[in-house]
Amino acid sequence: MSSNGSLRRVAIVSGVRTPFSRAGTLYKSLSAIDLGRLCVAELMQRTNLNASDVDAVVFGTVVQSVQAPNIAREVALMPLLKKDVDAWSVSRACASANQAIADAADQIALGHMDCVIAGGSESLSNVPILHSRAFADVLMAANKAKSLPAKISAFSKIRPKDLVPVAPAIAEPTTGETMGQSAEKMAKLNDISREEQDEFALRSHRLAAAGLRDGRLSAEMFPVYVPPRYEKVATTDNGVREDGTLEQLAALKPYFDKRYGSVTAGNASPITDGAAAVLLMSEEKAAALGYQPIGFIRSYASAALDPGEQLLQAPVIAAPKALARAGLTLQDIDLVEMHEAFAAQVLSNLRGFESQAWAARAGLRAPVGVVDRAKLNVMGGSIAVGHPFGATGARITTTLCNELGRRGGQFGLLTVCAAGGLGFAMVIERV
Image (cartoon, one colour):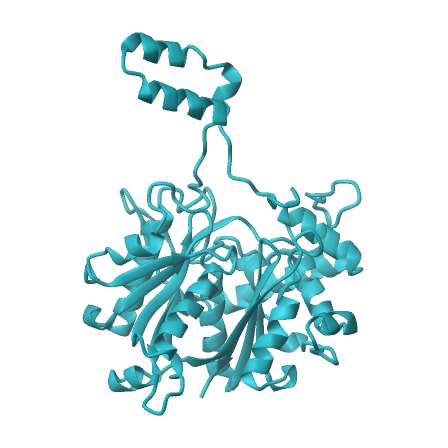
């Protein structure tokens, strides 16, 4: 805390990310740890940050490595950082990087730390594939066997069906419903048409393409040379379709509800690999080191609702909390960044902001308000650039800060939906 006992202001000094790459393409040989280390190294080099100034690394990921579950510590154990730097990992599903930033901000605000690198990474090209329970039991029995005949006896119990691998679950454990199925439900409950979804998806691609073309989005990335031969290099997000049309999107068949659905591969975010990180400091530390912050964290909030209801609607509860804690209303906000898991989810969240029923659930007398579409995701979003689960929150934070600066705006609001019926919101101030 400051000398008068108040919380210190937390500065966002800089942010950077890898280009985002569709799973199974350029980054398929890289782990989430590899991507995270590359991102942190670039962040330190861009800011000319001295390793001795870094107090901690906080990183988020969703599909954790079985062999190295604390990704933050593995990222921190890189040559550019000291071996005694603190590190811990967080997981709030698709809002994991947001939680990493919030955790880091809390430590700085309380005066426990002065400089923290926070972000997230995801390699959905390298998800762990598990054995069946029966095969695992056989392996355990064979491992405990004290003689060769006993080991042979254990292995003799294997049946062909036991060898079928078990992929990570993509459904909610409590409901059995996938995110895509939840988006379908939300589209129906909130009366969101296929046409609205496709139009929103096309908007995302066109705005992202414009941001890449004029260098605004490109400036947040760095080239990634892919091992082992380093002949291939990722220089831009490979999911953005600059020449897409509504006709092409309309031709795609529904993916999750093939008979009555409206959610397609075209109006949903693609499965993606990538990493993103931000550099956070106390206002005093940033000034002492000569940094000009790109933003300050004004407030944040999280929320949860029943996953069996509208799985991705919790940002509607989190956003008014964050705004209230910031002492602001939606009318004060210059830019809004809303994670695009699905076009149906974004449009449902926007309807929720305007709904008296959702306002009441958030403890409000009146709705949050109508989001001016000219202020929303002004350089596209996850539908176009991709969605590495653990990294998206840091990507959104960086984009929001940078674009606020370019437009001369003061306040920005970001929201992220997440599995489990979770939502996150943060208010950024640019001074």
